[in-house]
Image (tube, rainbow, N blue to C red):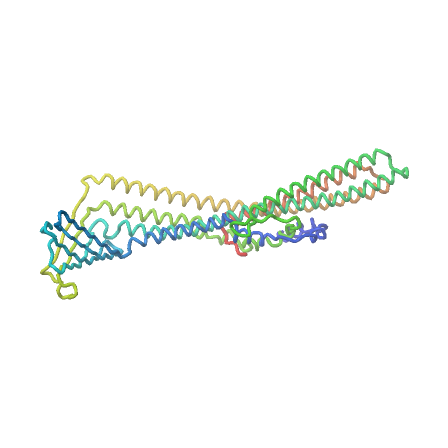
Length: 466
């Protein structure tokens, strides 16, 4: 049945092949290739990934080693109150542990006694550890993990955006193709009307036809001219709409030239263009759908946020221990006899803020999980509906093919009877109107068929390969 559909659409327009060769053909794959490579909105979709990569780089910055230098000096009435220099090198790690090396050199008349150090300065090296809150999970760990999830999510979202743009572009191409084929139909029947009018006019002069027939033939001729002019305007509008998607680069739009025409054999290549030739609902894995994968990364990010809020319920217990020595160039000079240690403890009594944050995080996570489940059902139903729609077009094609064929036979038979004097011009025009209408409906059926194919490409988010 599918092969019949392709053959039918080609047979409907076989008469127009000679006219088609007048211009250069812009095929659907070529058109979508231009859109994917040069359209500014596609470039804009790529910025989503660039933005996420920048956020990931920013999150990794929380683990960068850091150099700190603090110099403070006070001189008043020719007295040096104090002169303090403090330099530090810190290395944060994945867990709540931070290594630190420090050099301190202070002097002055009014220096605080606790800041007095040996003349050559004081060196220290040690570690600070968060024992409860911030040890197994902390803000910088969560931010880095979330940034990685956002980057993966952005890649899936980018594919969805690109497919949506290509879908919109393909609809304009199908409309352009539809208006072009309608114009060809009206052109072919305008020629028929001219031949019939000239023949009727000759017959009237020879006394074989009444004058009323020439009037009716003239009316039909003008109607055909009017319909052709309307179809030309529709073709111009559709070609301008198509030009909206044609860019040489992100700064240079392209206007479609008049000699460029669509490919009337698009039906042969459409499955390969949209990469849906082997698509099968039974083999369709919903878990690999970019929308579901994007939601999956969002859920992982929210789950990481929930874990961080859970960690915030713990008390803050920060301890630090540093070996100190006046001889920084001697490793064995650092020992347990000289050290600096401390502990810091804090915890809200009711932890209402932390409990509220955790509850909100759980609500967000549950909301996204429910959205994920609902989205799976929606995607499956949409794809099933599109598949049934495509199957229906196969059946509609069979009926339309028979209707067009039979109207063609009726029209040719009526024309023979008319020139033999056994029919009237009214009946010939009536048969022709029905035949034209059936041809236009066949074009509309093809257009709907193409849209359904493009819709499958968009809803299944299938990768477009040029």
